[in-house]
Image 1: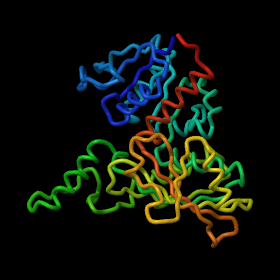
Image 2 (image 1 turned 120 degrees about the vertical axis):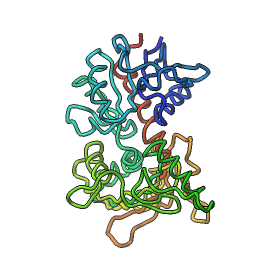
Image 3 (image 1 turned 90 degrees about the vertical axis):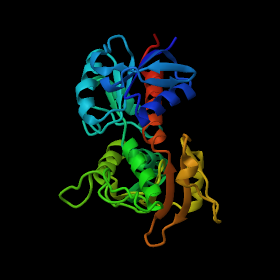
Image 4 (image 1 turned 30 degrees about the horizontal axis):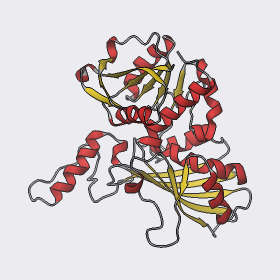
Length: 340
């Protein structure tokens, strides 16, 4: 016996990953439905060895379904998530719409799984931003040991975080550079992304930061600890999949890099690959398709009393989105829901 599960936005990058991961992790599914907008009606999606045909979300009745994994934008989520929740179906939402709602849990299972228990207020659970998700997985075990005071993070975020059109733009611009007369002007991004980096993700705010940077601050405080001070610089880089982060951490208590390494090796969801030699670290190419958050380059920061630097890499379509949503569903099933 299992659950009746809906994947909303099943034709997108994250939606397809949700279907893949539900199958890979053998989530107990009795029945599954793939939903998308009307223009994708009938589009085929894979779920294990099965082929699903997308249904039109506009006409779908969520009554009797247990869990809906949402991977659509905030505008559509605003319409359909309350509809699903009102029908008694628990929504796990990947958009930013509900992340900052005090009545909606914002959950990374390795960090704050108990927060799932608050889902009944609105029948909605929020998935954090991709860049936040991998970072807090790394910060949590260190925070438990030495209490984090301040974090300075610079992100190197892949174009898949923007969507398929961004992937196509990077591909076409890269090809166009080598073929005279076939150059591709920027359309998804404000500047060329091929062979370039863009220190701008999401919209600019009045204080000069971007919304992506603000999200990392607000979400870390909500998920991990409101006392943590954090400043972020978020950068888009010409990588197809996989977000990387350079994280500088200041602690209240002493913590040397050797103990931090052992703590991280034992922490859930983390794999430490850290040899102090050429190639002894993980890069985005190596994390694609993997579940883990990888940690490398663990070293002391001698410029502050209790400081560490770490390098953090993860598949943003997985831990940053689809995997985290499925892990939330697993916790929800184990602690809250009865199987059909």
